[in-house]
Image 1 (spheres, rainbow, N blue to C red):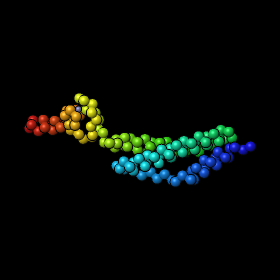
Image 2 (cartoon, rainbow, N blue to C red; image 1 turned 135 degrees about the vertical axis):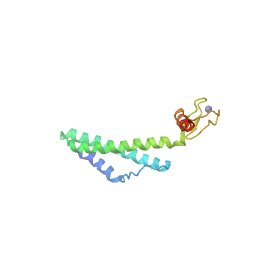
Image 3 (cartoon, helix red, strand yellow; image 1 turned 30 degrees about the vertical axis):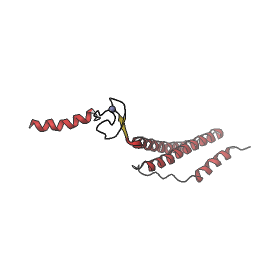
Image 4 (cartoon, helix red, strand yellow; image 1 turned 180 degrees about the vertical axis):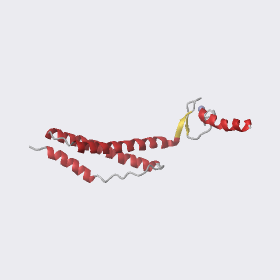
Length: 141
Ligand SMILES: [Zn+2]
């Protein structure tokens, strides 16, 4: 009984059925990012599965094609890195939350100057220092 070929055949069938994932430059549009993330996540899962099936195939035949495995692993790593980057961008874009108020803990949007809840200034200290510095330089002259 030869079950080996059926596994690889199924992998091949899946690969051929799946549309080629086109990876574009990250866009600011969250909808586009989400679509890109979904496509990448699907591709990463597929490559994972593919690599696992291929390794299994080689193991049971006791014939490893290391070059093939390395190439597949590299492709998977690339897609995985892209997915990570898209997820990071998406998290940053989600609702535009910039952080929490240090006084009351209310979430605020990026670029907010005062807390909408308690009215405390939200400017980070680094930004305030950067704003003050040119002023003191100006008055010194
Ligand atoms: Zn607050």
